[in-house]
Amino acid sequence: MKRSLSKGKNSLNREKLLEKEELEVIRVDLGKDEFVYVKQMNGREREAFEKTIVSVSDDGKKVDQTLDDFRAKLAVRTVCDENGVLLLKPDDYETLSCNMSAARLTAIADAAGELNKISEQDKEDLVKN
Image 1: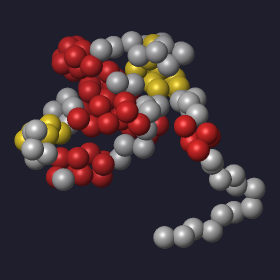
Image 2 (image 1 turned 135 degrees about the vertical axis):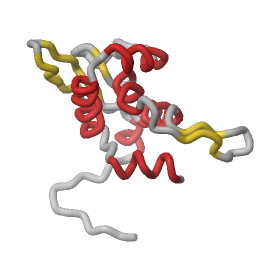
Image 3 (image 1 turned 180 degrees about the horizontal axis):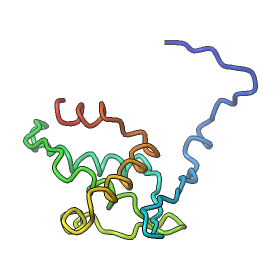
């Protein structure tokens, strides 16, 4: 499929495509005068996150598909300091899910989902497909 280019738009060459992109970090207010930072994931980080939702066997068949702790799994892979350095480890999701209010966890996951273009349809597709 061909798309026409608008004037003023630059086509990226190989060097530009492979250049490290600066990922966005945003502040998420959680109430009680508290906040966290949430970062944009790179491609590899997004793949690692998606693997926490769907497990694949050695022969390439999906064996486990679940949205359990989706918000916490997304939070541990995106909550960071102001420089984009992650604060949590992937295994922290269970503790986070048990110890943080649903309202605060949802605020973090909603911001991370928006920043990383993770829609409700994406979640459904991960589990269905």
